Each structure stands twice: as C-alpha cells, then as structure tokens.
Image 1: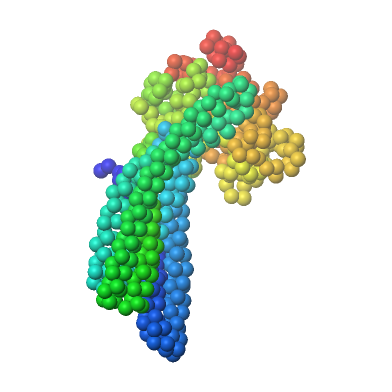
Image 2: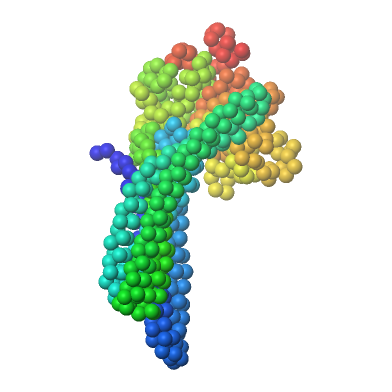
Length: 564
C-alpha cells in the first residue's frame, strides 16, 4: 500500500479543519457584527420617519438608545470575531510550520533534496502564513455574505426591487471574483517560487561570503543574484498586476451595484413608493454594501494565494523519503559490531568490511567519493544499492532511523555549529546532566576556550563563523564525542589544525573512546597511528587491512593517500 501523498487541497482542508471551532466562532461573531452594521442604516431611517419628521423627542431618545445598543453589540462582535479569526490563522500557520520542519528534519530524509535551505525556509514561513490566513479569509467571507443577506432582507422589506438588485448583483460579483482569481493563483505560485529561489541564493551567498572574497568572485556572485532577483521582481509584478486587475474590476462592478441601488431607491422615493427615512436607509445600505463586497474581493485574493502556497507546501510534505522506515530498535546494550557485506553504492563495489565491538578502526579511501558513499550508508542517508549493512547482526534497513541514530553517530567533515555558547554547542547532543568537559579536553577545545574572552561561555555566531576553521573543527568533534554514542564514525576531523594539536587530539580521542566502536575515515597519519588497524579502500573495495605502520611499508596507494 503506497503512503499517503498530500495535495494542496488536502493541506488547505487540514489547515481549516484543525481550526474549525475558532473559524466557526469567528464567523458567528463576525456575522453579528455585519448584521449590526446592516441594521444601523435601517434604524436611522426609522429615527427619521418616527421621530425627526414628527418632532417626537421621546421617540427620538428611544431609537437613539436602540442605536447605542446595536453599536455596542456590533463593536464587541467585531472585536472578538476578529480575535477568533486571527487566532485560527496563527494556530494553523504554526501547525503547518511545525509539520514542515518535522518533515525536513525527518531521519528518513528526502525533503531537502533539490531544495536550497532558503527555499525551504520561505515555504515554512511565507507559504505557511498564506495558508493559515485562509482561516481568517473564510471567517471574514462568511460574515460578509451574512451582511449582504441582511442588507438584502432589509431592502426587500423596504422595497422588492431594491432587494432584488442586491440579490441578483451579488452572485454576479462573486462569480467574477472567482474567475479573476484563477490567473492570480498561478501567478502567485510562480511569485513564491521565484521569491524562495532568490532567498535561497541570498542565503547561499552570505554563507560563502568569505570564500567569495578570497577568490575574487564577488562580481560573478552579484551578477548571479541580480539575475535571480530580477526574475523574482518580474514574477511579483505579474502577480501584482493580476491582483490589481481582480481588485479593480470587482470594485468597479461593486460601485455599479451601489449606484444601481441608489438609482432605484431615488426613483422609488420620487414616485412616493418609499418614505424619506426609507430612502435614507437605502442610501446607507448601498454604502454599507461596499464593505462586505470589498471583503469578498479580498477573500478571493487570499484564497487564490492560499491555494498556491498550499500546493508548494504539499510538494515538500509529499517528497518521498530517501530511506525506508524500519520499525526495530538496536538491541540493548549496543555492542557496536558493524558489518558491511557485498555493499554496492555509488563508487563502492561489493564492499566487505567488519568492525569488531570496541575497535578503533581507520579507513583510508584513495578516492574521496568512496569515503562519502561509505558515510552515507553508515549514516543511513541512503540505503545501499546492493548488499547489507548490519549493527550487531541486525540490518540497518530493519531499524527505525531515529532509533538507529541513538546508537550510531556519523560526524560529517562539514559540520556546522549553532548560534549559542561554545559549551552549549558541545552539549547539544549530550545526555542530560552529562559533563562535556572530557569531550572538550579530548578534542582540544579547552585550549580554544582559553583564548576566548568569555571562555566556554563565549557566544558563537551563526554556523560558527566567529571561530577559525580549526576552532570550529575542534568544537564539532567535541560535540560528537560528548554525544557518547555506542558507535562513532568521524570523517576528517582535524584537517584545519596544526600538527601538535592534531597529535594531542589523536591521543585524547583514543582515550575517551576506549572500549567503544569508533571508525575514523581520514588520511591523517596522526589519527591513523592511534587506531587498532586501518583498512585501505581502493577502487571501491577493501584491498588490505593492517596497522598503519605496516600499510605505509607495503602499499604505494596508501602512501600516496596518507603522505601526499
């Protein structure tokens, strides 16, 4: 049975369904406000007919009191109705944002493929906001329809022709607004796509600003962003033109409807069919119609943009997972025995590799791409195209990816730090109440914090840019060590540190990981020299396995990879 893949319609339905009570309450209170607004012109007409034209002070005070009560009711209804609608929109937006972030962070992966981080951020913010706003649009739209109906009822009681003008004209306006929302919907989707792409490019350029300056690539980067930004601007202008066309046309037709009501009312008053007060009421109700009809035009715009954004959100939510979802959990306690049997993936060819429990193993790949493919399989960012990977005799494909990561941690070479203190970064994945001190000492972070103005409490900027490359690597390694996983796989953790520091890290790493399975995928002689043994990965296969010193003596390929 294939998994459920949500569509844009499903996203909208769930967004509104999750807030149905607040939407209903907002619509009910908003309807009370609209009915009150429709009653005001009618009551003013009554005041004129029953009090002003008859010079009846008592009747004047009575009807003014009634008007005051109606005003109080409609004001309170508006306040609490708007509050309920806004709350429904905000909660729906929040729920969508949480769901999107959960999908992006899903251990099975897939959502980030083919999408830049900035594009995903735009979807989780602006698109979620637009879909959430549909709840407020429905609340306001229902209230506006009730207001128009109340206006028509009052006009029908005054004069059948006046009521018919409203009852016939309003559906025409609604149909016109719906037809004009179609091009707006498609152009709004294109606008959001371009805006997300521009945000992603901008974030990408900011992240690589130092590198761009170092290689003199600013002109090319500026030209690239200018072209992207221009495309986003053109898409925004097309959407704005579609929105302007829709709004302008609907408002023009609304003005025609109001003019028709006023014209029919004036002719009826001239013929004596309605009184002066009823004529005033008719004019007031015609002007009142402008409000709900403008609301309906705005609702059409919001629904068109909401449908477009819901489609974009659905595309992210429906992205297939990169790996299958197992249901098992690693056996307790985790021994840490890793076995790769006949693994084929990318550049790997029938790879056989055994890692004994508690072993400190070095892996040297003559082709960096092979090392990357091995890490993908061990981290379950991808399942092997052939063969199996097992942990303590259980295939990784049978394990839940989230449960697997509580036992196996793969620390990538390009590891970003988070905004916060150095200590908070190191403790990010550590068990609660665990002391990060040993991990910081083993990774050489204690030497780093001595040079910082606030020590381990020094704040790190986004992605760790306030630290040097070597400092970032040491903090990232300390974070991996502090996580205290039964199996730790580390990829080139010391490429940016000096030889003396690297030797200290090698000794500290062996000491802190004593008795637990550790795999060092690296070409660093200092790290390889402290391993129990090293396997040479050449041509996608293990070609030899021996201590580092032995491999240096007997393999040209090994010497080239390690000593070059």
